[in-house]
Amino acid sequence: MKFPSPVTAAFIAELTGAETAGNLLGTSTGINEIHKVEAGDIVFVDHPKYYDTCLQSAATFILINTKEVTIPAGKTIFVIPEPFEAYQRIVRHFRPVIPQQKPISDTARIGKDTVVMPNVFIGNEVTIGNNCVIHPNVTILDHCTIGDHVVIQAGTVIGSDAFYYNTKKDRDVWFKKMLSCGTVVIEDHVEIGAGCTIDRGVSSETRIGRGTVIDNMVHIGHDTEIGKNCLFAAQVGIAGATTIEDGVTLWGQVGVSKTLTIGANAIVLAQSGVPSSLKGGKTYFGYPAEDASLKRRELVWIKRIPELWKKVME
Image (cartoon, rainbow, N blue to C red):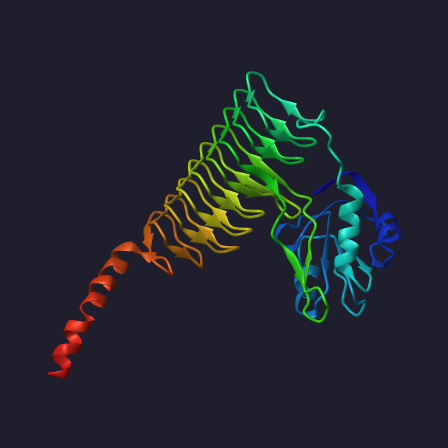
């Protein structure tokens, strides 16, 4: 999430109640989680295992629960017992929940010749391009952006919160939700089927590339980047922070794990599971998804096991 204008380290320290060290003259341009940080961003870390990862990341400002670290040149640390709660406080300040009394917000911008059917909800600061069709009971939540010539079928939800939690098992409530302040961006000529759910980024964006077509009942997790001209059949599920490159086809009920990449023009056959990155230009099948031709040969040999066992026992 980018701030409306840069803010000083002193402002962030006062807002969070943190002690500062390092470069106290810098200004921050936004807040992000570690997978998406850029220069000028604030990030939080509360476990020694990840201190160095955050300090050496692109982030300029680090919310941290110790001052016993080496601060890289030009960076600022904000020392506070609960960095996660400080992160939450910043998000609430810059992206508060704004109650909405109308089905379509007065701050939404809807382009020329776009059709919005009955019972559609469009949130604050949403932008929808020209020549779109938004079918009944679609929900488009705050700060999402829809391009031109986009079709969204009935019952789909765009911009639901990220499934992303701070987990600590030494407290009564193990899972504390990390507030979602990111967005969804849907590029031109995209079609999204009925009953789909597309989560917003935790603090960055979930993006659907130009010309991609998505069947019914598909879920796309937070911060996932979908390339151009992809095709996803029904009941595909894609976890967070995943990259799907251009021209990828995922057939029905394919499950894709988090933070991996599927290369351009790959095809994953129905009911396959993808736990790790796949190279482009190949066809995959099974769990774990592997080259489909090899997987089919494996299945042939598996079917022959009873016959082979019988011969061995004779």
